[in-house]
Image: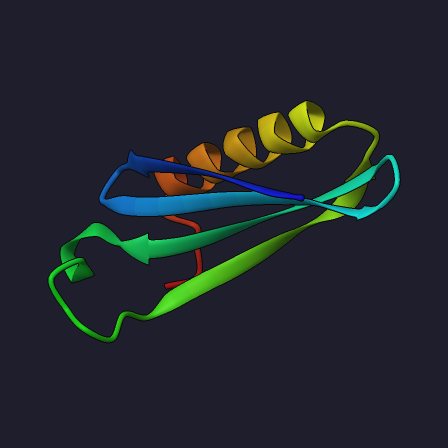
Length: 79
């Protein structure tokens, strides 16, 4: 099962995704894109994988969202 949360912060749109990689083990990643690129057909993005594994979907998502907002606020997303 996969779940995605989308947010806007500091000129970026972030897509936080979590998925169950095996029973009871969740992984997370964040996809960043520039908000100014939303009108384009082809958009450059940068994906960040959260290196740790989580016991619950909620823990994985909370970590991904916190990580993503912090990176967006600092402008440290790799784009």
